[in-house]
Amino acid sequence: MDNSVSPLPEPEAPLAMMEIEKTPISTPMHDMPPPPDEKRYDEDVKSTWQCGSWCEYIFVVVVSSILLLAAIVLTVFWIIYYRNGYSLEDNKLLFNFHPTLMIGGYIFLSGFAILLYRICRCCSHLIVKLCHVFFHACSIPCIVIGFLAVWESKNQHDTTHFYSLHSWLGLITCGLFVFQFVLGFFSFLILLCCDNATQKFRSTMIPIHASLGVATFMLAIGAAVTGLTEKALKDLGEEKYSGKENGTFKGFDEEGIIINTIAVILIGLGILVPFAVRRTNSPASFKVYVTDRI
Amino acid sequence: MDNSVSPLPEPEAPLAMMEIEKTPISTPMHDMPPPPDEKRYDEDVKSTWQCGSWCEYIFVVVVSSILLLAAIVLTVFWIIYYRNGYSLEDNKLLFNFHPTLMIGGYIFLSGFAILLYRICRCCSHLIVKLCHVFFHACSIPCIVIGFLAVWESKNQHDTTHFYSLHSWLGLITCGLFVFQFVLGFFSFLILLCCDNATQKFRSTMIPIHASLGVATFMLAIGAAVTGLTEKALKDLGEEKYSGKENGTFKGFDEEGIIINTIAVILIGLGILVPFAVRRTNSPASFKVYVTDRI
Image (cartoon, rainbow over all chains, first blue to last red; front, top):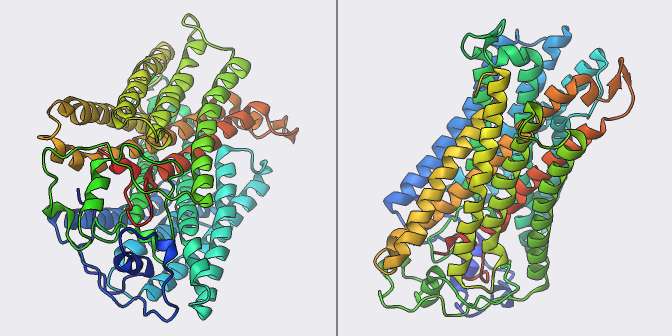
């Protein structure tokens, strides 16, 4: 059985992979620390170029990218076409920044930031890391403005904050996102200055950062689907949402279908993106996760 | 970096693991099919007994089990204490079977069926498989009765079927569950009769079955959280849910907190259970997923 998904050779293989190649099969890895002056990110890993690997790589990368784009495009379309677009003056239109910027920040930008580790097979690992930080950094203003939009909109309506499941999930996601950003920035960029001295610490942090990153993404999707359900029920109302007019079924509401479709796309991303980054980067005999790379 | 999570020895190691041990590190696995008469499930894999591995094993198994139990117990408590319990006669109480049986079938039983591969380290792999099928088989009547409960309840209210995001997700989950059950039953139990002849086919099916299984579990959680949001908004209403009485905030509604807590537990399971079964079963130098076992 071959689970490898490496259609492209890996010009800059990570330390973990190198270690496995160089370690005798009966020797536990932790007994053999790499020499501090070992040259990293410069060897190629033997990749399998099977048809199945190609298909899976293309499927994961292309479908994930299409779904990420579809989610944000469909959200903008929904807001402009059915919710009268955006405005800072009108309170109802002020709220519309919230779903757009939250899906833009937490799903679109963060999703691409995660997927970068899967897409960029030929770039320097440091460049991938910097792009990963850049995408996450871009999502911060989106999240902050998106949060302020709903806060201000609720204040103007005198609505209670943080009572719903959507807001609970959003709050946990926000806390985890900030924690992850600080942890990731400190561990993988700042500590890179003293590369060899901090290598062991950084390699310990990788599975934690990767697991928490996927968890944050899943939480964001959970928050988004509950938010979309709330929005559909509150704005459309149960009767219109269920396609009824004066008690008679007239066919499903167009806006309801659009909202459901956005949510189904998000759920699809919640399954596909974690699957993508947990796949191995190397042939079956060297199972190293994409997210194991330092 | 050592990602192994094997606090207990593995008395019946699977073929995939055996293959890796026996295959020279430079030889791709697919070039060396195992001899058809090779004895399987009878060798031990060298396990690491590090503190971190123990902690992770206990954390994953114990916390997942507690969350699975908490989800179903809290749902039953919510229905009995706040929703007047169950009845086949009263239409409102008939609906109450739906959330209980769906969480019981899709989350509690299916969750334990998935987790079995992580919990049962000392049992025969065939017994684990049979238990996995048994738990899933037990969830079928729950899901069928849960579905009939909401179908009948909606018919009596003359409500449209399948308009909401919750019902869309539920329908996709149901289809995927049936597909998975048929696929799993056929591939891993029926084809076991001609063990060696079907071994290659079955090993190909494993990652597909495992990935789709995790996807079904995630979809079920997506369906559950949207369903809980719907229920909270429809039954409590926005004002009561947000803790207001005649426009004045009086403190969060107890039932709302219970509903939110059930959903947060489910989201926690959606992160923890896939994480648990995707961890390796062996030391870091032989990265074999729990779900790679035939």
